[in-house]
Length: 146
Image 1 (cartoon, helix red, strand yellow):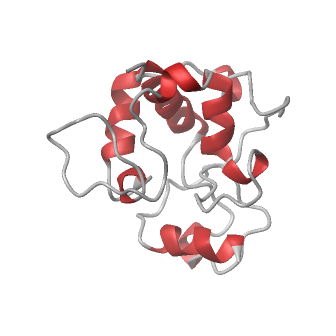
Image 2 (cartoon, rainbow, N blue to C red):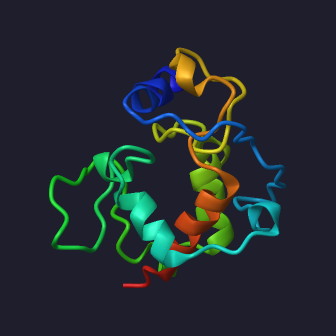
Image 3 (cartoon, rainbow, N blue to C red):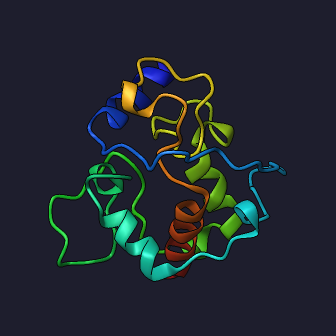
């Protein structure tokens, strides 16, 4: 069922760039402490990714602290203050694959390809977000302290 839920979200998203692969990472406790590929994220780019309803589509389930945004979801936790509640490593793990922190999570994995079912052909074998995009999202969400 978990893969099916992920596929439901993936089906409505634009296809990723060709050649996009899953970057190696190490889970330690409830976090991935090291940035993927040693990359540095940009909070500005991360904000655009989170707001983009064609790729990550975060706002279908989450609300961010931006009154200019409309039609945000309430299925997932509010993202206001997430940077004060979670470390960058904890955020990174939850964006890479939330089921590694919570096996019952309904949020899709954004940087996993193995073990998914019912994935649109455009997405088979490719993560939704690149390593750089993951780091950009982590930078943005880590900056949300209030």
